[in-house]
Length: 200
Image (tube, rainbow, N blue to C red; front, side, top):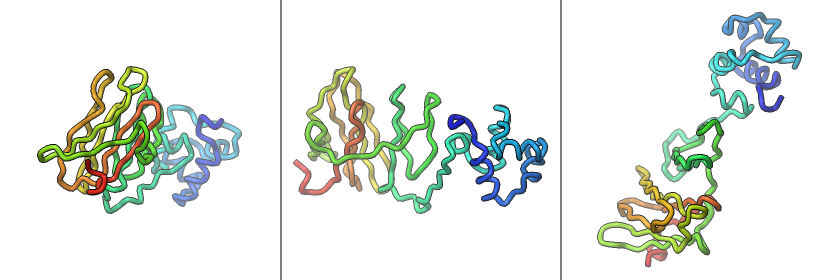
């Protein structure tokens, strides 16, 4: 039951939208008895109704199936709240400036939580001509590697895709960069904030 839409979720979302069972039934072109059965756990909506139910309740299909509504409170578009979502199947990287429901290969992706870069994940940042040069002393094998480096500024993101057998390094524009991130395919996301004391 938890892997499908529960009646409690439908009821909660319907009531939050101030819809009666009859009103929701009319939108979905089903009977209000069907809505009642769903909400009391005596029946389940047909799979073909999942998208219309989500639309009627003003949530995404992923939110409907998970029971968690995602509200992006980041209305001011603050780049310092940038989140990275990484697919464990294909390595796809999606960056967002706030909370979102992100899926890849049918998997709902949680935002990666950045840890401070240290140990084998320490990111060394130096200035090379007019750019930041970021590098890590990290294995770069197919099984264990840094898959991307990213620099976040107050008005954008630069992402550099890395590949096994290459070097764990990248160059980024200096202008307004406040943090550099590295993603290890085994250990997750690491971050170093840019300050003069951190530069080599």
